[in-house]
Structures are given as C-alpha cells and as structure tokens.
Length: 505
Picture (cartoon, rainbow, N blue to C red):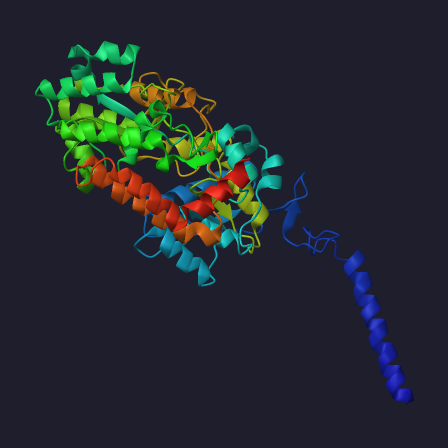
C-alpha cells in the first residue's frame, strides 16, 4: 500500500511541474492560443474567428456551372482567395463542388440530401425544402452587422429577406422590357404615337405597321410562354397584382375578367398574324434568332445585361444603325412591367447551417460587396476583361461577350477608379431598360404557398397554360375561359382563394 501511495504522489507531482512549465516557460509554443482555447486563429473586432495566414481554411462552394472542370470558375476563385488574403488577411481555399448534369435544382437537391452539404450554396429553386429542414442559416444578424452588404440592398431585397432570411441575391429587378431595332422604329409613322400614349390599341397599330413594312414576318414572338408578353400588357389590363382586390375579397388574377380581356387581345394579335404563329414551340435561342434575322420585330428581354447583349448582337449582325430602342410598358388601367414578387428570392446564395465556417462564408459574401470585391466580380480579370488606361477602367470585347457577375450587382458601385465613357458597363439600351424597370417598380402581394398546396398550385398553373394557349391560338373559343375558371376553383382554387383572403386581409 505504501508503494502504491508513493507512486500516485510521484505522478501528481510530475504533472504539476509540467503545467507550470507550460504556463511560464514556453510562451512561444502556441502564439495564437487564447483563453477560449482556440488555436491558430485570431479574433476580429466583431468577435468572429477568422482564418489567419498560419491556417488555411477550406470553403466548399456549389454554384451552377462552376464546378472544378470550369477553368474560368477555378481561376475566379483562386483570384478571390488571393484578394481575400491581400485585403482582409483571410487565408481561404475554395473547393468547387461538381453537380451532375441535368436540371440544376433537382441535381442540387439530390446532392444535399446525400449528406454532402457545402458551406456556400447557390440555389436556383428547391431551397425551401432544405430550409424547412433547418439546414440554412438565417442571414439577418449577419447582414445587420455587415460592413458592405447592408448598404447595397435594394428595397425588394429588404422585403424578401424579411419574409425569407435564408437566401440572398443582390441583383437588379428581373422584369423584362420590349425592344425593337432603332432604324425600323425611327422610320415608322406609329412610333411617336406609341411613345406618347402606349395603349394596347397603339401597340397593336405599331405591330401592324411593323408587319406591313415588309421588314418582318410577324411583329413579336416569345419563347414558348405567353407570360413574356405579360410584362408589356398585364398592368394595362388592370392586372397589377397576383391577387386582385374586389368588393367580394381577393381573386386570383388569372381567373379574373381582366385576364379574359387580355387573352382576347392576345387572340386578336394571333388572328391578325402579329403574334408568331409558332410561338408555342419557340425556345429562348430560336426566339433570339428570329429577332436578329428579321423574322420578329419586337421581343422582350431581362432589363440591363440581357438587353445589353441583345443590343450588341443585333449591331454585330445588322450594323450599328440597328441598335435597339427600349419600348415603354403598355398603359391602361395601370402602367408598368409587372409587380415584383417580394415573398422571397427565387434564386441566390445561402450558407449551410451545418458548416463549421459560417462566419467565414459570410465574410466572403460581404467582401464581394466591397469596392475591391466588386472589381473582380463585376469586371473580371485585369488584362483580359479590362485594362487600366490613363487612370480609367477600359472594358474589353471579352468583358462584353463573356463576363457576368457571379454574386452582387448593386445599381451604384464605386470601384475607386472610373470606368471609361468609351467602354460603359451597360450600353444605352441596357441602361435605359434598367432605369425604366426601376421607375415602374411596384411590389406584388403574392405569398409563399404552403407545402401542402404546392402540388395543387403547380397543376392549376399548368391548367392555365393549357387553356390560355388554346384560347389564343383559336383551338378553343374565348368563352372557354369560363370553363377554365370553373375547373380552376374545383382543382383547389377555392381553398387557395380562402387562404389568400386570410393571409392578405
């Protein structure tokens, strides 16, 4: 027993000596350690742990088309890591996650449900079911304390984050605007009347003159879905919200008398040969080809960058005189390019709630909203997409033809160096379309459809597409709209209308 007691006392004494040695005699053994027990990390002014130059942290990113096989994407994230270390002292390595070919939302959901959940996730649909599993971070507190992001949010971003704080997408409004070749527009008698009073009647007269001029086969086309025309005409026919307020409560706009009047107008355009007779089979690329080749006179495109691309391509095919003119939205009961859905972002970036690097992931997102981050994300690589010449940023042909911002596009940005007026970020039509969409901004009253109604809702939307196509093309009479309304209510519309009235009151 005495031997055992002596052995225990010896062990305890040696342990005490070792502890004293660690505290006082080995100060440089772990220079980054702190009272909380963190090692190889430093704490910033906000109390967040950052990767230091001594420890490289890996952030896994999944983004549509940005897998490790995409050389531009690999270069982009390598450059981003370099800038983060240079500007913020963050030692980050990005690991790009490949998503299987096919529908991105579907394949991403399969990836996440398999248990592989990257730190940063780009969603293009399918995010709600992931958020419902508590797998996405509430971004509200991060944004409130952010250095840059909180200052670039637009009103629709703020509303969407209040309703659904898991997805962030700081981009311009996504409404589409109609465009036409300027040389044709300037030569037409009906053009000024359209600008002075863009009523549906004056639009029809303008369309008719386009066809009568012999320049086009039909006045306008869409990529298989008549909703593209709705950006021009919905509000003129009084369809200014998803749910229209009446004396009897809220009514879904697509089963309203106003919708029937609009379909009658589209049907008239189709019968007169002003709407492409093959619009139902058009894809986005064949729609654009019809526009460049002179088959169609007017198409709609997303304001800003897409209209800018249409303008560049049109001039490339048909000469500088064919630069585009942006047309106004039709005016009637209301005017605008349609109400903006503010329930949630339809796409955007999210942070995984199971990530060990949530703070760091947000620091990356916030950095991309800074002037330094915007230089990379908006402009690309110096010497390729832009050059610095005479104290100005000169954009190259490669910028206009291929570059796009992966993350944020605030309306106003200060790079610290001005962009040359000779190479603007947006052409005049692109800039004009963006300004017009913001001028007519109005928030929608749509709301998130509860999960138990989603399947019904999708089926009812398809029912509308079927009936509207048959009515417009003459396969069904206009009065068939009344049958559609009856079927819509029977297919679940009664319950959804009741839900809307409870939600919106």
